[in-house]
Length: 319
Image 1 (cartoon, rainbow, N blue to C red):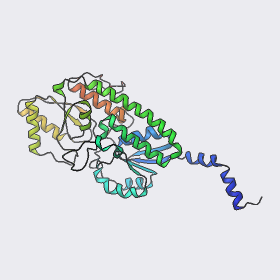
Image 2 (cartoon, helix red, strand yellow):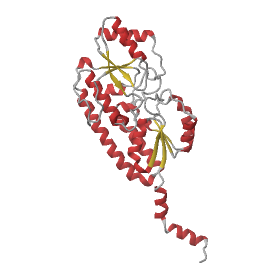
Image 3 (tube, rainbow, N blue to C red):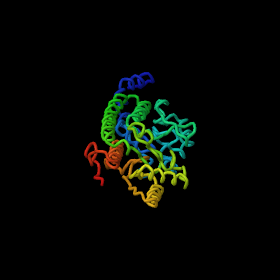
Image 4 (tube, helix red, strand yellow):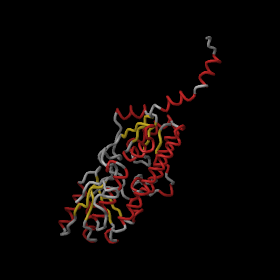
């Protein structure tokens, strides 16, 4: 049989299903900066993508610098997802260069500006810790969904259905957190931790929030700041403070020692997940588990009532 240009094109057009099936069988290569973004991407993409998170448990995104292997992974990726809002401060320049390829999305910047918190530390910028509010984080989740659709539009229905299911989990999480945190006595609703990562959490659930360091862990906590917070602990008889999994506990322990020197006993109420999730393969290593842990630990430490193993009965037991 003699093949002409026209017959070849006609034959190719007659078999679009085969071409589409072959394309769909190859998962997208997606790189996310933080575990929280990667968790949403895995839930939404399903088997349509392989997700790699650059920053694992205990990693501070404020101070993280890209490695040579990170650069290779991001430049080869079909899609790169990052938080934005100056969270990954050391990656900003590199990310903006990558954006010229059109495959880079700052998912937290999908949030309406009027819902973001301003902060004295970041003049002209917003608090980037959106994931501390399950309700607010839904905007970032929808940003992940839209980014995936943009690079694989033929899977739009899959991404949309998976995103809807994930958003329902976040709604259930928000309801649980509100229920258990409402049991904390009003006078005890103060969260003091290593850095100011819990502002959206405090705004949602009616807690006063103070970080020893500022919005970024790059901020230094001076002696005057620590001294002032020691006085606050003593004057208001605050009995518990919190450490963070991704930040040194040095300054928190300095507070406890300073209060003890003034005759006031302060204990560590627990370790909270602030800028990174728990270990991979654990419940706390998921976004829902991370926030379930935080709400449960804060409620129990400050005199509220919450089940020891959290919303889904999956948390590790906490003393």
